[in-house]
Amino acid sequence: MRATLAALAVALAALAVPPSSSAQKADTVVLRNGDRIVGEITYVDRGALSYKTDDMGMLAIKWDKIRRIISYRYFEVEVGSGNIYYGQLLAGSQENQVVVAVSTFSDTLRASDIVRINPIGRSFLSRVDGHLSIGFTYQRANRLWNLSTDFAADYRTRQWLTQLEANAYFQDEEASSATSRSSLALQQQRFLAHRWLLLGSGQLEQNQELDLDLRALLTGGGGRFLIKTPRSDVLVGSGLVYTNERFTASTVTSNLELLVTVVGEYFRLDTPQSDLQATLSLYPNLTDFGRVRGDLEVNLSHEFIKDFMMGITMFDKFDSRPPSATAAKNDYGVTFNVGWTF
Image (cartoon, rainbow, N blue to C red; front, side, top):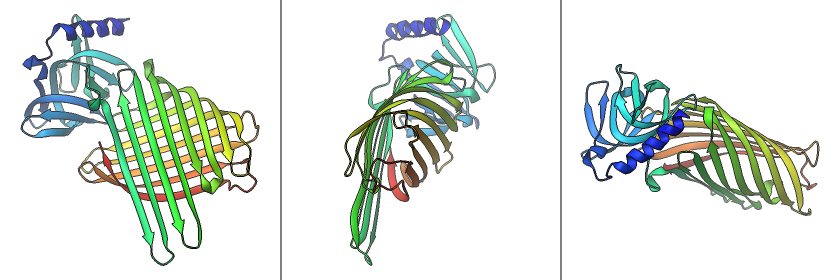
């Protein structure tokens, strides 16, 4: 109830203050070394403050290097427990404190507990994050070449996260047939209290190595963040999946599957930045009882120039009983790539 009243007070206060007011744009950050920087808070995420200044451009400041932060604009502040607070950002009585205040409400938070801060009313483009990476290999001896691409974009609002992901891999060799695999997925997460969320997604994929011509999946379920800190996330989820698939030399089949998934991510924000992410998804088949599919993917990326990353991806796709008699049960591999984050 209190969070609802605070959110309503924020909305009314935001309407009452003219958006062109210079005070609204003068955010102040005081670092632990005593430096004071005036600018505009873009967001706080993954243990870093994105901060826009007139003289130095866009800065990325580690959250634990900040002594105080003050802004009379209005923000959404999320802590590791999953609770969300709304209001202005004021200095606390101690260094490791942030006061979130609006109207007659105020909450004093430990700065180390804060995992995300978003200004209310951010533009569409400022809410989009993502990456694009490309990998290419050529060997003259056996005329082998392969090309891999990976793209992801996230759009975050107060209660929703929309994710678009696409990847493709092509390989051709003089002595064997060409092969390819690709996927396209759109996912939405609806955030609830206490780190719970609802999940929904649609996905298309194909894999010639597994004789999979096309698989379409519709998923609905839920999950919870077991761990959510400025440096790491661990999410567990489950749900039901409707699957329609066509294998080479097989008829189209439809199945209902159970989904069990675990996603873990660790961020190292010291320059240069690093990111390690692992996803394990299991799909026990409820229609074709005894059949189990599994997807394991591990991504490691490391920044070598600002906003440019180099990385490695390891994957294993498993199907205990594919409908096609000639299909392999496993497809696994390693790809190297260079990418750009935005």
